[in-house]
Length: 97
Image (cartoon, rainbow, N blue to C red):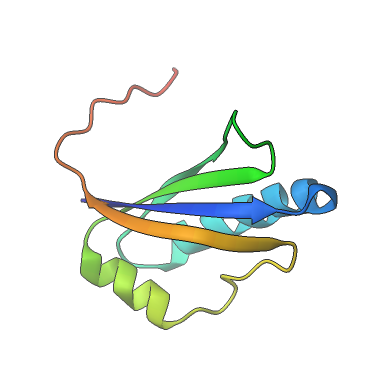
């Protein structure tokens, strides 16, 4: 497993639309892309306009295949600041029941 960490700078007037776009897009990607395991969206506490998404993928190959077809991966009111790919070594997160 790998994690891709995306950082966006989001225009203040676009925040609600950005969250909706991310939510719908994550559901679509998770249901239609081989190897997509979902994503978590976070807002930083140091900059209220910076957002972070941590996506989980089965492999670098499945993530690369997604990146090679970028349809729907841009949002008009946000700029990607950085992307980092990390190997998942251990995963102990609990989900609420």
